Image (tube, rainbow, N blue to C red; front, top):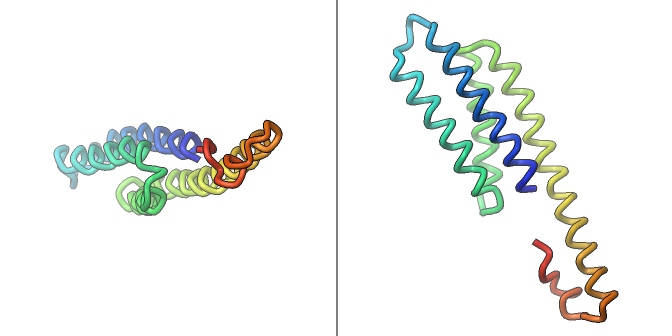
Length: 127
């Protein structure tokens, strides 16, 4: 799951940066406001890459997806891009968990085949 989610977050990092460039053209927004908000969101994307497997990491990722969609009120194309990345986020979490379960199952089967029943029952080594 970590690899799929991190890939989605890195893609969002770049999209947020490009959205910041578009938002700079809005005369009602100051450049410092735009880059403070974009900088925080971009930093959150990078930090989340390492926090995905920790408690609350996926939920924080969902909060980022909601914020990305809400940024469409400033840069209208972000409604579409935010929805696309929310769908990618769902797919990354959903299929990433399935991949993790399959890895754990195969590791348990491999441990049983080698005659190490302790590893098969505890799932040791299946991270």
